[in-house]
Structures are given as structure tokens and as C-alpha cells.
Length: 226
Image (cartoon, rainbow, N blue to C red; front, side):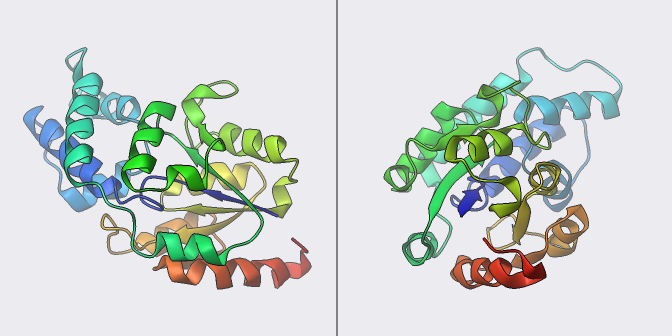
């Protein structure tokens, strides 16, 4: 059985940092939005995708370097304050079977964040960036999930994905995989679990300590042997 983890907002508590950086920038551009709404709408998307949507809503082009500026600001903020999500190491200790990471972040960013939080050696070399495999399409494209399953020789229906964003859930479901939604990181918001369920998650957990038991339950639900 293969277990696929998203990284930001599941293993490392980076989504709240990214949201705070992007909130500063979109407000500077003239878009009025709260931190909760920004997290609700854009969590899990690349900076490029976020600012493409902002440009559409503002009905005007944005500075050419806005996504790059966001990345630079985020790098600085992550270096200063990034932490692992609570309970991640104990959770990994309690899981058996193969595991990997599928993320919209670049390989360089993933390596940086995982090393800061002492998680890199628990996954490498099986750390997959959606924008660097197959057609280089970010979630909600299923490509990165299918790439991971092929790498491990795991059938999609026998693969479980842990995701914190609706875009990630949609991509995993499109790949034919089963999804546990996670709502335990600092960026979580009211209605987060319901949004993940609407996107196709079979269940949600609010702390990583519940992941091993939930994985075991999914092995028997619906009569599917994993």
C-alpha cells in the first residue's frame, strides 16, 4: 500500500505563512480579502496560479515579477519561522508501507522545507513536484499522483492520499485514489473539513495522530483490500 502526503499544510505548517505573504501582496495590489477567505480560495495553488486569478478579478495586468516577489518573500519567512505540523514524526513512526510526497511546490522548495523540519530523510528520494513531472501541471491535475503510483507500482485504487486543500483532493480523486482530508494545520478555517469532503475526501482528521488508524479503517471500508 502506498500513502501519499501533500507537504505544505500536512507535514510542514507552511500554508499559513504563504497565506500571510500573499495577503500582504494582494492587498497592496488593491484586492480586499481576509486571511480566511484567501486560505479558503487559494490554499494549495502555486503563486503563479494565485496571481493569475487575482489579475482576472482586478481586470488588469499585474507586475510581471509579482509571483517571483511572492516566492522571495515566502522563502525569507519560511527560513525564519517554519515548523513541522504537530505530531508528524510520531505519525510517520506509526505507519507501515511505502510513502512519498506529492506537492505543487518546486523540488528546491520542498527540499528546503523538509530539511528545516527534519523530514527530508524520511521521504527522499520520493519527493515529487507536480510542476516538474509528466506534463508539469499543478494540482488539481492528477498527473503528480499518477506519477507517484507508477513509480511505486501501486494501483491508484490501492493508494491513500493525505491532503489539506480542495485542489489536492480533486487531483487525487481524479487519479482514482482515496483521500483523507487534513484540517489540523494553522491555516485551517471554519468549514475546512466540509470543503474537503465536498471535493471528494472520504473522511477528515484534525490531528496527525489519527492518520494511522484512519488508514487502517480505509483498508476495510467498501470492501477494498489495500
